[in-house]
Structures are given as structure tokens and as C-alpha cells.
Image (cartoon, rainbow, N blue to C red; front, side, top):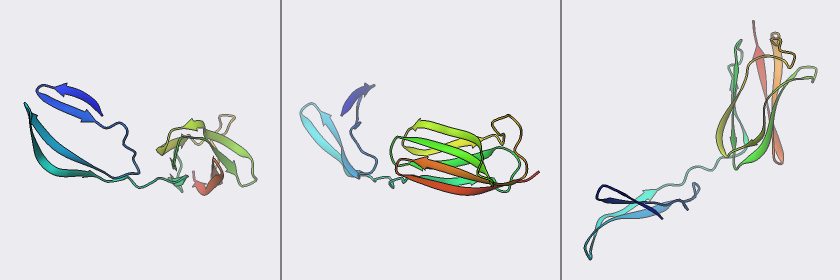
Length: 141
């Protein structure tokens, strides 16, 4: 526990807690040598474990920037690429090491040459350790 004192209150922070575990903490008061249990237990539930994958790509159909929401079970090296229907890579909105959790990348709708991608069907590919996920995306004008 990491202890700090705020006014006359002692605060202990459990930095060893893992998000995928449930914990029970007791709230106690100590006055001199007398300990009083103030609460029989505070339960902190585990968070649902995140998996690797695309969560949302859109708006589709849409005209402006594209929001690419994805999740990572743990910190990992990833790549997000946008391809046209002929399989040509137009853009790479995200790559490199990203932290665990829910993440968002954005594609501004432009190809590598800086030109706006024309209306049409596109594929967003998300590559992560030992897997990949894909979503179709429709751009309109």
C-alpha cells in the first residue's frame, strides 16, 4: 500500500491491484491503540477483460474523418491500415506500441499523397499480436 496523509486522514492506495481481479477492502479507524472497523468490506469488482479487436469504425457511410475504435488486452505492437477495393494501401492511421485498454485512432479520409479518398468501399485492417480484424467502410460525397 502507498500511504499518504490528507489533513488528519490516512489514505492508503493499493497500486498492486490488478484490473481483472476482485478485491475486498476494510475501512478501519485507529485512535491511539484502539482499532474500530467502520465497514465490513468494500468490494471492488474486476473489470471485464478486454480482448484484441476492432470495436467500431465509422461513421459508415460518411464523408468526414473516420473514428477507429479498438481494444488491446495488453500493451502491444499494432498496425491499422486502410485499403481500397483493389487492395492498395491508402493510409496507415495507427502503428507502433499502444497501451492496453480501449483506444481510438482517426483516419482523416486522405490517401498517402494527401488527396481526399473518393467515394467508395474501403477496408480497415487492424493487425495485432497473433491476429487481425477487418471492417468495411463506405465513404460518400
